[in-house]
Amino acid sequence: MLLRRFASTSTLPPTIRQLLSSPQPTSPETKVQLSGWIKSVRRQKNVTFAVINDGSCASGLQAVLKPDATPHNLTNGASVRICGNLVQSLGRGQLYELHVEAVDVLGECNPEAYPIQKQALPVEFLRDNAHLRARTDISAAMLRLRDSVLRSLHSYYEAQDFHYVHTPILTSNDCEGGGETFRVSPVSSSPSSGQSPDSSVQSEFFSKPAYLTVSSQLHLEALAASLSRVYTLSPCFRAERSQTNRHLAEFWMLEAEWAFIDHVGDVCHVVEETLKNILRCQSENALLWKDGDGTKLRSLEHASRPGVPWTRMSYTDAVKELQKYHASSRVGFEFEPAWGRALQSEHERWLSEQLVGGPVFVTDYPSSLKPFYMRANDDGQTVACFDLLVPFIGELVGGSLREERSSHLVEAIQRHGLKEEEYGWYVDLRKYGSTPHGGYGLGFERLISWMSGIENVRECIAMPRWAKRMLL
Image (cartoon, rainbow, N blue to C red; front, side):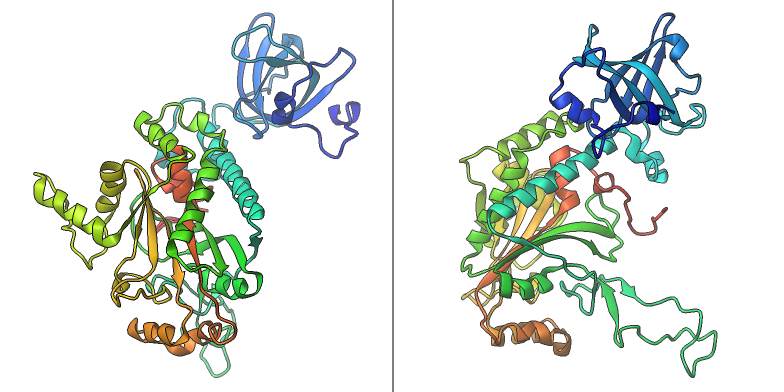
């Protein structure tokens, strides 16, 4: 076997990305061993060209084989281990290629039956075959982009002395108060004592109802009361039946909380610096934007410019601008804007795309539109909060100062019709060394959509779940 003939002395053999990032053409005596999947095969009379990719980068590596040394089962999709010399390529399209001396086909792939072919495949077909779609170039690039963004986030937060923490997936309350939670209960084969076998009533596993989390914020606040600055990237779940391109039932949320912050503008500043740091550090977008919308790409590049702060405006001013456009335009909006009403997606996109031409923080929404935990402003009508609206996406980030005054928080809980006993521990945080604090939440799939130009968040996550759709 090739593995025995060319055993590696390192813990892991090099990936294609590692070889190509600092290539050093090998001497005839030095062998390079690689493993991966065949992306394409081109057989000629005197030579066979095959592109191998191990997922570490977008480009892959061209392998050059002699026809008599090319296995008959070397086909698109097959997994292989190859060994040879990395040399400068004489052909166009690549700087280096691998002259193969030996090849093992580890896993055969019937090219007639293999669903992932080189031609473009319909979105619905790939959704129906979600277990295979990561093998397409676009899906693989999206996954690498997610990884790259996460690394940039960790780097930024580490530099700012934030602590990465893990928060519960199972919770006893609905953080947002929207009633869109998934309730969790055990599947038991034996009925509880005193119940008939066919009874639909089951005892609660935790002695009270439990739900999948919709946000880590409340738990992050408890941890920030000790560590000052905390963040997490955690799965969240919302049982909303929306079928838009911005919603998933299971998604990932980046959330950060920190203590000793007095102004909502300071939260906006951290969000802006975090995102600009990400936008300046990405390389995977070359493939994703290859055939993309030039207008969207220019908008993204404009947003990442250093030294140019993003626009900030109050909800009240935003509504005034929306009303002026609605009254003067022949088309107007489907939903008429008015103070005290939620901004619709069409409003958010108009503000960012038409009025501002870039990201815009909309601050100080009416308290009736926002969750109970946001800090009340002195005007008695609004709360110290913001939504970050970006072109072609709409809302990307939401954040606020949190209500650190115990009496105000209890009043807000009552005003929103929530059960005080469910939030007793949360109110308790305000009794012992309470501090002004704040934070935000960012939809990770929406961020990937904005950065990549992929319009639907269902294509911005490996295994999408939404209402009436969970295939694996």
